[in-house]
Length: 186
Image (cartoon, rainbow, N blue to C red):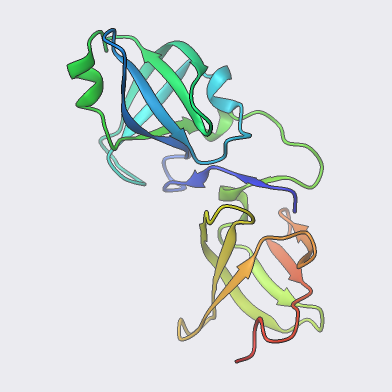
């Protein structure tokens, strides 16, 4: 697996988190947004975004995008309609910046959005079911799949590295891994 982009919010809301507001930039209300995936260019193509307090926030607010620019490494600058001053921008610190799943651009072969992997069954090369992907942790590189067994008694942390993820079949909701010794068994 090359990379994953964005975490999932509630599937019912059909939104994906692209980043988090970490502060204001300048005096005109621009937001500094820490991107979940610094290679993700989806934010640059958005006409509107959602600002949420947490994943699955039913009170998330949609805002029209005025402009998106580059920021520091791993960040973007985001200007939204109605956010015209530094104080208004600072008031949004900590908010998640989300986009509708239908707004996301296509990924290259072998790349997947994180929301596509949540809920996939994970098997080893022998066909033994290890569990289901419950969440994905961004740890730098690579991301880590949190796989919970059917009894919710065991949790496996599986790096989302190309050498380990042998096959990802999003349509079949199945991931086959080639786990090195000691990754799964204690």
